[in-house]
Length: 504
Image (cartoon, rainbow, N blue to C red; front, side, top):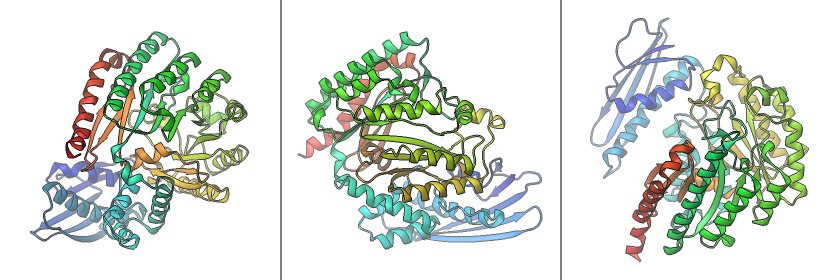
C-alpha cells in the first residue's frame, strides 16, 4: 500500500504515524511528500491557538472513495512544550486512525495506543484522583479504546492493587533483574540476548565473574544506603543453562551481597527451556528457597517446536514439570504463544487441553510478534502464520479457557508488530501472581539490571521520570566493561536516591 500523507512537516510525527499505519497494512510505503500514483492520499490539517488544537483529516483512495475525520482537544494551563506536543500527536493519531478504519473496515480495539504498557495509563489516571468512570471515559474518547479492552485493563489494575496494596508507595525500593545470556539454542522468534551455550564455557566463566562483581558492588551500595529490594528476577537467555554448581555460587552471592534477602517478597528463576532442568539444579533452587520458576512449553505440537528452534520434546516439558512438582516447586509459570508458524485454532486448543493436565499456578499467553532482529522476521516467507481473524479466535480461546479454569488476568503488555494488534496477558490462580511482572510493567519503581543484556530503568522516586541504561548484549563486551557499567549505575542510583536523603 502506497500512502501519501500531506500536511505533516514535523519529523517527530513520522514514526508514531507510521506505527498507526502499520496496524492496518503489513506491507506499506509511507510518504510525507508528493509521490506518483499513491493508493491512498490523506491530508491532515492542524490548527492550534492558546486554548486548543483542532485537527481535521480527509482521505482519498485511488478509486475515488472519500473519508474525513475531525478531533479537538483543549490545552490545560501551564502545559510544557513536551506535553503540548503529546496532545497534538494524540489528536493527529486519532484522525489518522479513524480514516484508516473507514478505508479498510478494520477496527482497532486498542485505538491509537501502540505503546507497550496500556495499564500504566489507567494507573496514572486513577493516581491523579479520577474516578473509574472518568478514567474510562477519557480512554474511550481520547484514545478510541474499546470497552472490551478498557474492562480488561480495569480488571488487571484492580488485581494488581489487591496483590500489591502498597504498589504506589514502593518507589523508594528497587527490584533487580539478573540477565544470564545463554540458552541451549536460539528460538526463531527471539531477540533477547541469548547465545547457544555449547562451546562457550570460557565466555560463561568470564561472564559469571563480572556478574558476581556487579552483585557485590551493587549490594554494598544498597546496604550502605538502606535501600530495600522488592523482587529479584533471573532471566535471559535461560538462567538454568549454567551448571548446578554455578547456580549455587550465584545464589550464595545473592544472599551474601544483597540486603535482607530473606525478606525479599519474591525471587524468580526462569527455567524456561525444559532441556536445561535437572534434579541437581532443582535441588539448588530448593536450597536457596527459590520456589517460583517458569517452565515454558510455548506449544505442545512437536512439529512447531522443531520449526521455531526449540530442541526439546513435548514429553520433556511434561516430564520436567512433574519433576519440579515432585521436588516441592509450588509456584510454576508456563508460557504459551498464539500464532506460531503452522498453528491455528485446532492446534492452540490442543495446547490448552494439554495445559489442563498440568495446571500451573500461572500462565502467560503471548501473541507472536515479528521482532525486527529475529530470525523469523528475516525469513518471513519460511514461517507461515495464521491470519488476523484466526489469531483473534485463538485469543478468545485463551480468554475463555483461563476464566473457566480459575485463572485471573493480572498483567498485560503489548509489542510492535504483534499479530492481530493484540496483547500478551499474564494469568494466575489468585494469590500466585508474579510480583516482578507487575513491577516491571507498571514502572512504579527502579528496576536495576545486572548481567549481560540487562536493561535498568531508573524511576525517580518523586517525579517518576525514567532514565534507561543498558548493559551490552554480547558477553565479550560485557566482560570487557562490567566495572565501568557498575560504576555508571551506582552514579545514577546516587542521583535518584541522594535527593531523598537531602529531604529527610
